[in-house]
Image (cartoon, rainbow, N blue to C red; front, side, top):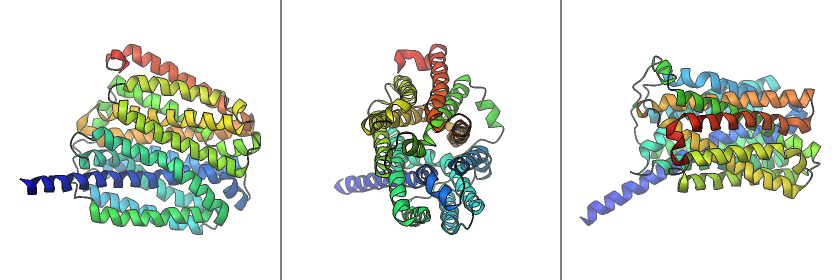
Amino acid sequence: MKHNLKVSSDARRTQYFQVFLMGVSAFIMNTTEFVPVALLSDIAQDFSITTAETGWMLTLYAWIVAAMSLPLMLLTSQFERKRLLLGIFAVFIASHALSVFAWSFDVLLISRVGIALSHSIFWSITAAIAIRVAPEGKKALALSVLATGTSLAMVLGVPLGRLIGQWFGWRATFGSIGVVASIVFILQARLLPILPSMFQGSFRKVPELLKNPLLVCLYLLILLVFTAHYTAYSYIEPFMRQVGAVSENAATFVLLLFGIAGIVGSVIFSRWGDKFNTRLMLISTILMLVSMLVLSLAVTSVWAISLIAMLWGAALMLLIISMQAKVIMIDVNAQDMLMSMFSGIINLGIGTGALFGGYAVMHISLSSVGYVGAIIAGVALLLLIFMIKRFSELSERLG
């Protein structure tokens, strides 16, 4: 009996470690997506182009993920999941090597294409993998660990990437990500179990899923939220430096606070997400709207912009996990497909937001990005209010 309990305890410990490893994988994948936000000025200077032109790094990356998530997920739908994950990380590591040696901005963009393609498949399969390796009754925890990996990318990844870039140049930042990804690759190979694909659908499943009005509204909400967020956030570093005259170190500190707040958001979800999902979505959307609305006023004070960064970071993370939890349960037999579209739509929003932000910077002013983002967040809030009134599963006790 004692032997059985020990085996059971060891197996459970291993499962927790596998979930943790998926969180670390998410950290790596999202660090490389977010880190150019903190390096835009340095990359622009190195290649003698404007920050708005450098912003194409964000837009191209995001739109490739948006366009390729579903096709690549379907193409690899029958692959065994561990082997697929290792293949993704091999492409990811090779692409970072190219980023380090990029001799022109075009070559840097090509390296980002490779990273974006690996990202496309990663986020299609990773939530389902985390849920499968999680101990019994710990699905919400598994999603929270992934979200924590995402927020740690903002907490540690973006500020650390920025610091490495300040000290050793932006190429060293991408090199460091490649090295850490190599360590994660080895751990994945040693520790993850064989995971046969459980995918049962085909491309014909997409129209069937999109006939679900709640899912369509959730996807539209996700698109609006991320377009709003990245309209302002894509240019937050030059915004703080140029509009607020914030020092380099203070800008790094604000980015750090943004990410720490993301962890707080994921902890709040792990405690209350199952019970108050819709309420958390509503509060988060309002907080994001207010944060962007007062951005230009707050940037003149490091303390004020720090407070806004914390509210904004926590709200964004809460919103992401709350929406992910709703989306993934729409159809338990098509979770890979649901998450693939979820990731694709997030990245469509990121690319569109970066483009809108760039347009605002070039044609209005750098200080306008918060207001433009707030307008889009206002539309997202109106949609969410409509959804709460329209769908009983959202409106019941605002749970």
